[in-house]
Length: 328
Image (cartoon, rainbow, N blue to C red; front, side, top):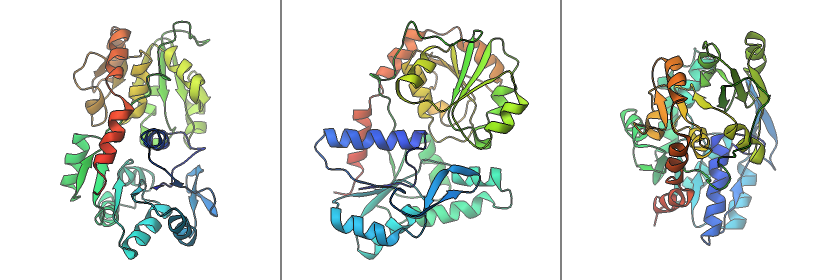
């Protein structure tokens, strides 16, 4: 059973990761069930109306667990469903694993400065401490979490669907080239304004939704805000772009970078955890504290090299890594 407060219609890396995990586990012969906000009374997350949080979900969740009788429980998020599942597992003496997908301390402090990061990290340590394993996406994040006092850490990396995300030679967008693409939540913690404020030729394109969209659209009228895209439509937007710009300094991984690379699109980003783990020194992206310079240099990189790099990052290997982290 995978317990997650993040689920469709949200479009983000966490949801895509968990969807693909379930699909791959099923292909390997496992029976998978999700415990998600749908089916519970929900309210909108403050400043994130598209995210619905379950209210007092414990009774329904107990029923789901009793009916399904899972041999393994993975708690993917630290929201109401996650805390309820944690309480149920502890009371019933069921082993469970957790994962850390989102830098909530940094995100919450960015939105509400009165809440210091150290207080939020204290709550997260309490949440993850009883888990038999707390999974993180990269070794950089593992070291960082260790420094924050987290234990029982295991690596569960991320992959990309290279059959869906692929180069499309005739893909195009009706904008002046070069096309600089951002895909992800349109929110303050994603540092999108550092991308939108760059002096670049061509067109900046933003694919995604979020609470900062309206304000950024007003402030940067020359940028193209296209809203969320999924499936083949998303792939065509990637493939039609000249470079993918990833301005975030707080993401734990950045699945969208792998998706762009699979479509043959080089990446420009800051040299911070996430891009350092995904790109490193490979000639498929440029990491520079001068994001303008990174963008211009990214245009010179081989699109074929980007695609070949992505081919080495399969989801199946990631799913097998997830299974190896479960309690025996």
